[in-house]
Length: 153
Picture (cartoon, rainbow, N blue to C red):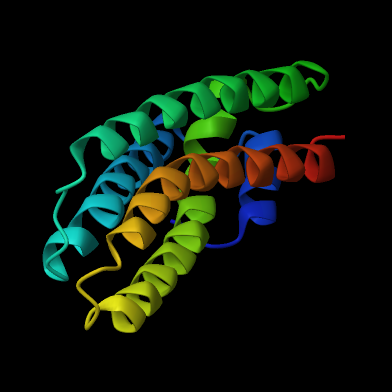
């Protein structure tokens, strides 16, 4: 299972070198990675969701970004006679999400270190919690679409 090299995976998909079982494994791994990596840091570092309205707004924005991103990957894939759209989204999501999650954990740790001692820094967490999820989802679809254009032609 290749979990980092997005371009190699795109080439494998284009040549139909992955089995359905492998594709399912990528999907499952990506799902667990996204859920665990976005929720667990807040609990590990003691900043669980105390800003419920902002968290809700962030998830609504994330859904909108997800829809637009998925449609843009669909349009990118439809121009090529290579791997299917679903295969592309599922398989390329794991290495892309790994990269995005590394940045997420590092930025979260940095913000936690900078503002852990300040009780009045709630506005920073408010901004962070609203912005991070939609940006991560946008980055995911952007990187997948980029790999499609580089490898499916």
